[in-house]
Image 1: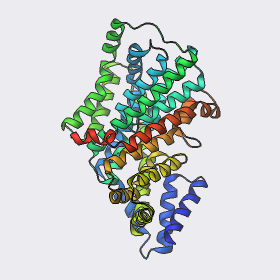
Image 2: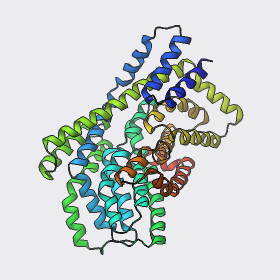
Image 3: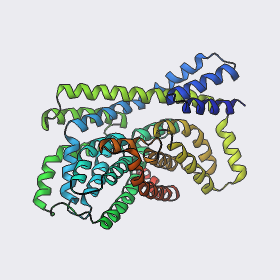
Image 4: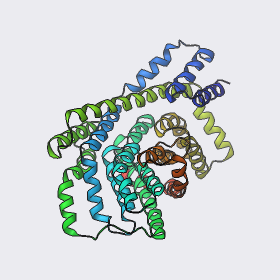
Length: 424
């Protein structure tokens, strides 16, 4: 009865329009009042203890780094370099969108930031050269889903904290799924571009590539420094987030000289707001997870599913369905913070690697960024391209399907997720 009340109150609050943090914390508080013989102050204690984690310092710093890279000229140089490499191919601008988004994801770990930073440059450029505006918006929205997959990923950091896994290993676990989804999107984009006869821009010129490389070298060094430092053991993932901020400030102020004090304050304000939202969700989900643990909901759910089938594939399919449905209504961060405490004990009973589970969870929740009615990237792509959302939804359907195919490959070929972490 208590478990039913917990989930019913959560979804009632959610569909009434309450913020996700309030829905999580409110349903937990209601449980304590009605069913737990403990002081309600336990909810506040769980919220504060959950966010009082050194590892979570990486979240605000990576958010800040993304904002600094967007306003400091780094994203523009990345786009220019990608243009010189693949812009001349048929559908070259579409490939630039995907490639630039991959680079930007490797610096910030944010899907929405990648969508906004690259989209502001590429969507107008594609429309100017005859691309369908809805296709351009849909492609950019989809390319933004690499952010939470390719390290440094904020969502992977949160999964590592909740699943008690190595942050370094979990960040590396996102590389395979991220590249897989990027390849799937590229294949579909090239097919659509050839079918619609979207030509490339200019011709390949090695001198132009070399010049663009020299101009963008400081931007391209960002992911090398961040990821190289983490995986070489020079600094931790949390320390890397601070270094990313410092590097972005230096490059933006003194190298590209596109960052000034006013922009710096603006980036700081936006980052504080985003961090506050995320930490409220993380804290409230900590209280929610405490209730789940107290009621033994994870073990009961695992026993129920095991009574139907002990096949690992059944567990994976059920997990995918649940995550894809939740992704239509909830952002990836709250999904991971809510579902990880539930799914981890079940995965252990089914013999599923927790590193593989992380790859599955983050890959599935990323697709939610482009699925209506709540897809954040979908709305961001439409907003940047100044198109009505319902028009972009029609153009994004093929991309949803192809990313789901990529998700199935990631889910049933564990090596895509686990190979690189196994090398650490």
